[in-house]
Figure (tube, helix red, strand yellow):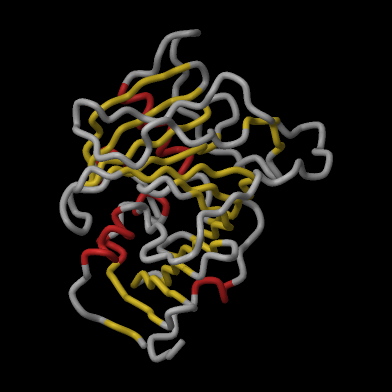
Length: 275
């Protein structure tokens, strides 16, 4: 049935963990990363698969100890189906020099504001170390779907107004406001990271730009978010969310497509549905 009551602690943790898995009862997945897709067009660029599970993931972290996940030096490669469409580029920094805070924010704002639709694959590590995979669909403003692969029975759907966490096996559906989620940077029509959140740090390692944010409007308190962005490929690679209780969830994305329009059925919430 559909509930519209104050958010219980377990569901609150699910939202704070990047709309993660909630009360998933299935065994941890042991799925290898998707095989390499068909040969790309010459203009496309190869990029590394999402990183493996970092050591110590799932343990509570203090602010001093929290660090963004770093990709290993060598990874298998896959090829993106589509590069993000052309976006206004931030002013380049000096060759080899780290980006300043203003340059980093400008670069990421330009990226997020350069597309209205996005779909692709994701690999998620929950706070307890479990690994999940699935498909991600976004249509801005406000629409999103996390579709988990079996045996997980969860779905997370945003229809522009509300977010539904649906469990097909348990026949439950819980509704929350989009403003309570830590993933507003994926859903807003026009993004301004410095205005919509607090930028607490910027670092660059090789081609990977890491931007740390704090969102104080999420459910349960302040969520700490790290965005990992590939400067060479001009593509989002990963976000890491640390919830108000100090637990971490990372979501890596790949095979991103910003050209194809998702099916609108992906974003429908039936408010009277009994699952």
